[in-house]
Length: 347
Image (tube, rainbow, N blue to C red; front, top):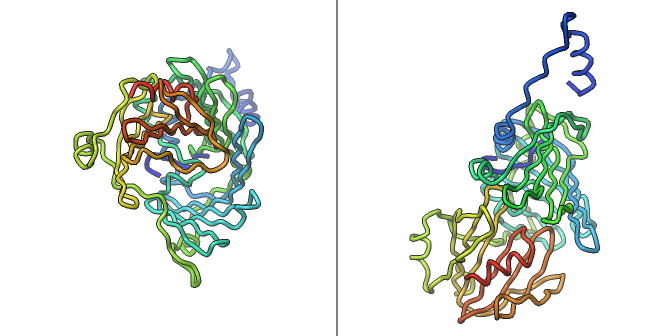
């Protein structure tokens, strides 16, 4: 994948070799530590040239419960993916096939095939902007850790502003593939963990595994689609039939990254995406003045300045929505609800 990805001599062997080949006249010279940002950059693009097959477990830690997802993954470099869901029970049999442009999500219980954006479905989908990360995060490299029977470098990314640990990555030493990924809340508690339980690197996989077809008896339905994104704010705003409102304040390190528009049921919606290179924040606006439909869990009240808002936290993401002057605003990101409310009150 080009900017996101599903990323994956044992330590004992290295120590033995160091002992055998150490010069008799003195201690062996310490191996130079790898450059943290170079290691991260190589991990971002590793699956462009590495094919593999494996099983991935994702745990999302909620306030009172933990949800688990188990997915069987086949990846043929550079951009073919096949994901088959093993757990939870209500997702068993779901199949996703993607070429990193479009993802077909096969739902056997409904007889439908949904066409979606790949980034919204991949267990490891994370946009990493190494240039912004250099400005906003400090990276420490620890050698070595074992994941799925493989030797890996552990990268710890800490915010330069809050000094809180935000992300840990375990990068396979020979291939650069990310074997494990952990995200953390602002208070230091773990938010989610995605890890390969097993992985096998291969030279090739059959093309038939990645054919994106609609089987007989199933229908193709569009998923949540937005127009082509743009980094040009003037061009984006010029397409709207209403006047959007931008935030006067953002979380430390966040800047505008891109935006897009969509028309659903005759209602135009704009999405602004802000990023600090690692985390992202989306602001949706539309001229309905209506709240979006909330699934479980039920939303909780949250004041947005002097206005009433509603928020939910699910799968490591917080959604805050409120109405003002005939517009509906919805913020979505992996930030605490109070931080989203502070940003919202500055619109």
